Length: 138
Image (cartoon, rainbow, N blue to C red; front, top):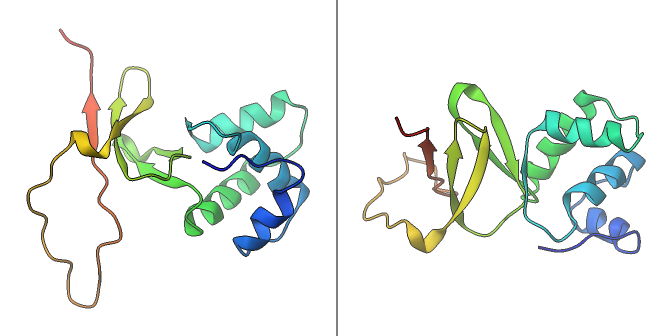
C-alpha cells in the first residue's frame, strides 16, 4: 500500500483523476498511511472530529465512494446492509465478526473456489469477494 504524504498527495489525486481539496487531503492522510485498515464512514467521521477537522459525514461518504470508484478502496457489504471500507487492495477475502462488527482479512490462497458461474450476457466478472460471517460459540 502506498503511503501518502504531504509531498505526494497532489500527485496521488491527479494520477487518479480526483481534484485535490482540503477535505480529501485530511481523509487521504488518515486512510493511506501505509497500514491496511477496515472502517465505516462513521468510524472515519469520528476520527476526523477527534483531530478537530470539520468534514461532514456526507462529504466523507462522497469521498469514500469516489475512492471506491477509482479502485483506491474496497467496499465490503455485510449483514444488515452495513458497509465497511477496506484499504487493502490486494485480492483477499474477509471474516466478519458479528459480535465486534469488525472485518478480518483472509489471504486469497486460504480459500479455494473450484467453480464460479459465467457472467450474464454483456457483463464480465470484476472480482469475487467472499465474506464469512462469524458469531460467538455457544
